[in-house]
Length: 325
Image (cartoon, rainbow, N blue to C red; front, side, top):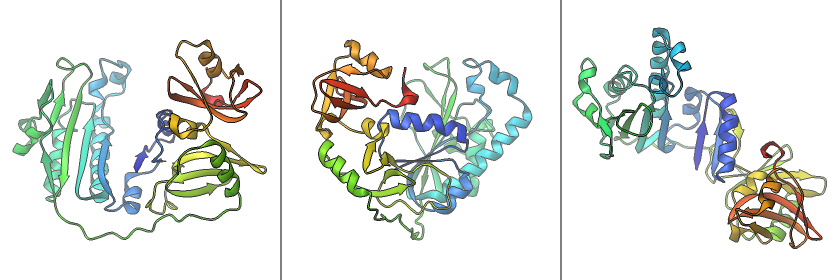
């Protein structure tokens, strides 16, 4: 299971579309503070990736406007945010788990110093070496007062040595055993409307869906098994959105189509990349193609684009309105 969190509700909209576009089916998207997440997910995760808020010095070349917003106050604010995020992440990580901390800044205060301060406060963590990738430079213990020797295991990505901007990486390992945390799992609820989804699945799909079904208002979601209770968390997308219940029927979602493979679908049409009907479909137009009447998935060289309703040799377009060209 993948938990994706961004404290900015605005940015989670872009995150949500990317998750759907890539056909990710095991993701729960949230917009919460790290402190609040740590109360629900205490000792839960095997791996945590922290893309820390930072002063963005590594982006100066790519985005010159970032220079205008840089100041000492911003630096101080980012350092505090990084400290708070690392503290919360430490609580959420299982014993033996891995935490990757990353920034897009050159500042030693936000890189080596943030990691040095964290290690001074958390003896249960250690730094691990990161593979000797081409162009990745070692971290610099000497750039921090009282810097630990193992800071050399961190990595700096310099824009004059790689194809990219300026970044920093630190891989942390949680050594000591924790007490077992007891989680309250989400439970599947029965709903009479599920019969419409079962009818749809039998008619259209070739796969078994494993997880916990949840109906929120009229929308049906599939959550990965063993998801903790999320009642106190601001959830933007509760797992894989399968579709919506209408009057006496079920309508599949764009997200369901994107998460399917060709063999998962009984009724599908697959266009070549050069077929003019691909663009017509993505524009929301009806296209002509022989297909068994009913719900079908439109693919392009094996990759799903979205749904259509086939009838009499025509495909009535069901592509997501917000995605249309």
